[in-house]
Length: 313
Ligand SMILES: C[S@@+](CC[C@H](N)C(=O)[O-])C[C@H]1O[C@@H](n2cnc3c(N)ncnc32)[C@H](O)[C@@H]1O
Image 1 (cartoon, rainbow, N blue to C red):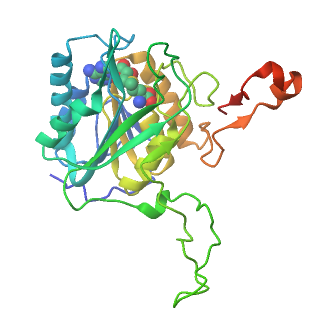
Image 2 (image 1 turned 120 degrees about the vertical axis):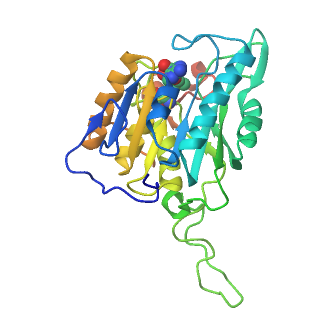
Image 3 (image 1 turned 180 degrees about the horizontal axis):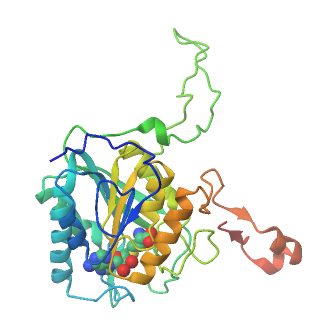
């Protein structure tokens, strides 16, 4: 069996997208249950497994079950994910809250002990903050979800330089001491930290598809760039409309995704093809999160607006 550290050439001759996992396919789009996809992937094959599982909220793509049954399903997914993960690979589980009636259960709190029991080691609990979502009247509106980033071992890929962001004061220099005159901060940029402010994909987002809760590409690109190398395999067992596969392809990685809903996978295939051609529309990373809506500002007086109205795009 080939070990995952043996890199496959990239880009591969011709773009290949396959319905079953094979090392020759740049992208595998598997229609079926995530455990069936895992069964096709040899042990230690993937450098990164990143996903957002269903939250057991009765959304149209999930069957609601008891929390215990849900967690048992997650344990099965995580067990197989750990098996296919390379020794220096990473697993990123993006979750929010399970809400039952008026009570909130943060899913990462329940996922953490499962991962710990599988021997995975937590590196960061990343808070993904966004501005748009349900407006709650009996509690504060939820405006973040989390990504639990685990590595399989203590030696793991972490390409920090690939994901640095602009420094607040890029030209700042030491003004005294032996380093006087030298830059006091890394000229390549700063560590993005563990609070990521990235707009979620709602109706006016350029990446929006028919899927009710797709990842923004930028969120996954940061993980792909930091936690894998070109040619590596990235797997998303709850692949939806293929955002993970797109982020992988844009950055010259391979991808394998599964989903039980054929309509989502049809969109995924189209998006992956556009990504491979460099034609997928994605929100630019350097676009500021908020900018005032000039049309609103001109059309109405500030007194009519109340608080300033801000646009996500
Ligand atoms: C939160 S969404 C993920 C969306 C994805 N991150 C994207 O950007 O499109 C969860 C997905 O899991 C899929 N799903 C639910 N049960 C599944 C199962 N047993 N195996 C594979 N996929 C499943 C759903 O159809 C849904 O598209």
